[in-house]
Length: 623
Image (cartoon, rainbow, N blue to C red):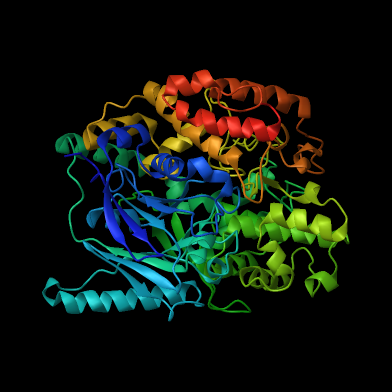
């Protein structure tokens, strides 16, 4: 019997209604761990030979909800949502915090594979070994909190009646989508709890395309046994004592960084990245604090408790409720839209939650649209109203139009890259220079021009996940691809803010019984997962393809000098990028064109990728 995981996945076919369980052998789990790593492996095995033909919003795509062997044991709990991304046409490991992974494991499964497409709206209900697809027509069209409240009450009441002697029944854990996902908006998120979301990748649209409104799970069993219980207890105690010392994160959450990233590091997006510096001191966390109605909120087993809940009690936005907002949403639904008013920022963040939109991608595409309006490329006739920087109501209206694919919102719902392609054709103007994205995914809220943030010049250039700000393609201090560290966290599946390297590998030993070392991870496992993920990204299709000679590149804006602040004039140089890119390729075992080398595949035992790479070479004219 394995330790730390069950070795069992649940597979549900929405087209036929068939449900079955699959065994995952120990060797596969040891090589691919879980989460992003296992997702990449499953997607390659099932779709790799025809990846270019697979429509991410078609029934042939696969949606994966995966835990890792340390889920429920390592402090904090997340689950990884993945599949073929409707934004990048590659694979994105998109994780979200909450108890879903723990409940799923308590029900006896390490993950869920969802295939096919339902004819009518459904939700998936997993209660231990009872698995059922149910009608969701009463939930379809509803916004986030309403969906969550209705489904939670229905299922909690049902469980209480079924097992009345068990006392007060704890609610199930639910992943769900809002109106944006239902309308296949490519920047739609998979939501969890009141304010959590797996935003990168656009997997809310995949759920919507499959007419899957929600997945609810309640497990009453134990977590799998661990290999060394006493050793596990000591490690857990030790890491919790370390994490509890993280005062700044626990007290302020990631929102503490909002003002400082603009003022101190000149790397915060402002008005679609036209600037990255501001000294608006009122846009700091202390001005958000007065709205908090829940100061310390941690997901299962998390001692850091960095989440905050904000609520507006009066005024024009009375009654809205959302997460802090965290730093990314302070930036993208705040400064990037020229909004430096905390209440306006909380309001837009709350509406993004309700509509089921990714806040980062929505702020990115709305900033793009606002700059086109500023430049006179998009007009009031195109949009239907004036779209000026700092106008909260105008951006809220645009947000609604995107989520419901109304008017110009239908075009922007395609995400920044595809919207730029279509607007360029419509207006006969090349608007791609104003699209701040990489391989179809808007970049995170950390700039590279000042050189003062953790995102270095190649952070997004070779990124396996496009513009993802967590999985950045910097080389680390040992000249290793920095993304390998994030692949590890996305595979186990754990929170970046609870990462303590001195504990992590020891957890593998006491929980799963694996002698996984850092050398093995960086030398074999991570490069193998990265090579497969890179190959799938470059296979792309069917509506967008990436040529690494062209698209392993920063947004054009990052080559413009910073216009203001203490780092005024700072700029990234193309010749530096070309030099760093080649160094990164070499460190990753890729050739001069950014494709995994045959000798790399042989060393990693994945020579089966060669045929797919040959297809890429043929398309690029390299064969």
